[in-house]
Amino acid sequence: MASRSEEDLRCPVCQDIFRDPVVLVCSHSFCKDCLQTWWRQKPSRECPVCKTISSNKNPPVSLVLKNLCEAFLLERDQRGAEELCPLHAEKLKLFCLDHQELVCLVCRDSEEHANHSFRPTNEAAREPRQKLQETLASLKEKLESLKQGRITFDAAAVKIQIQTRHTERQIKEQFKKLHQFLQEEEEARLLALREEEEQKSQRMKEQIRALSREISALSDTIRVTEDELKAEDFSFLKNYKATVERVEQRPPLEDPQLPTNVIDQAKHLGNLSFNIWNKMKDLVSYTPVILDPKRTYPELVLSDDLTSITGRRGQQPSNHPDLVVDFWPAVGFEGFNSGTHSWDVEVGDSVFWFLGVLAEKSVQRKIIKSGLWGVVSFKGKCITRSPLSQSTFLSVLKQPKRVRVTLDCDRGALMFSDIDMNTHIHTFTHTFADRMFPFMATGQRLKILPVEICVKPQQV
Image (cartoon, rainbow, N blue to C red):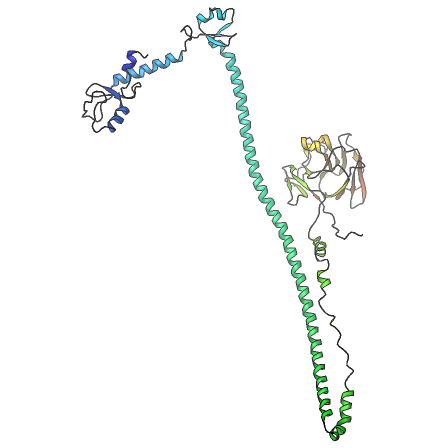
């Protein structure tokens, strides 16, 4: 139960310690807000305790009572800060290491804590506080890592949208070209059909006019001859010779032949879709290797068709081509683990380039050196590179402009040759157990060349 002094400090309306106490003429005190709320609910300004009417709508604040209330609340807070032992009502000044709990001096001497180890609270809190601070620091690091991850994911989400829009535009451009080709092809074939129609219709009209003239002349001859047959004998015999000559002088009549110059439908419709497809090969191209944008070094500019790379600043390796980190790599989108695969690369006048294949495990782990097989051209010299042997210089009479890379997974061979000179550069012999991805690197420009497309029906 609260003490009498505490009861004197409670507002009769809210039953809590006074807040901004005001005093009425009847000497009763209330919280300022409680009194104003009470008055708003009543027709007159009466005292909530004795019902005395107050003429002052803003009663004065009782400073003495306000100070007493503030001092009481401060003292009560200080008392609450010093927790007491629930058994002995003594201050908890020690920490039992065995029971891991706060105890008072009486508890220390009790049977329950006999032979236990104790520390003052300030000493006992030191080590747990340090551990908690370390844990908190770890959590803060984790939080910072998560925030950075969130930033990365937000950037990736934006990049996905940008890539989608860019790829969508490229797809539409490709289909626009195809649609335009098909539309132009359709118009050309319809035009050819209409021209043939016009030519053959004109010839047919000429033949019809000629037949009409023949019909008209023959009809006149028949009519005149019939009239002579109907004449009197004297008149008939008189005109007979002339009539016979007129009939016999007509050219021999032949039955009209069936029209042969009709529309050549076979020419226009025969294998129409195949012929268009065959013609379309001049519009489209096929590249045996496509580069993967996700595995292309950021400092490389990848072409829209994903077949060529260009260094932004034309970087060159500073010391030796064996230092792969000096190169800017790009990796193919598709890997191979069976069959024979070949692709041609235009190296042009690049001061240095690196062509070959990279094992799938190295791609996944991003450890290039551990699974890279290839040939490096470095300042006019060609050098081999593989994880199983030291780099060796190759004897090349002339720097190639176009290089063919051939991977024979079944035979275990990786071959390099000069396309223009038709000469062999180098061959690696190894059983490639892993899936191998095409690899190319430069600080300048490399391009994978398209192959010739051949469209023909299969022979039975």
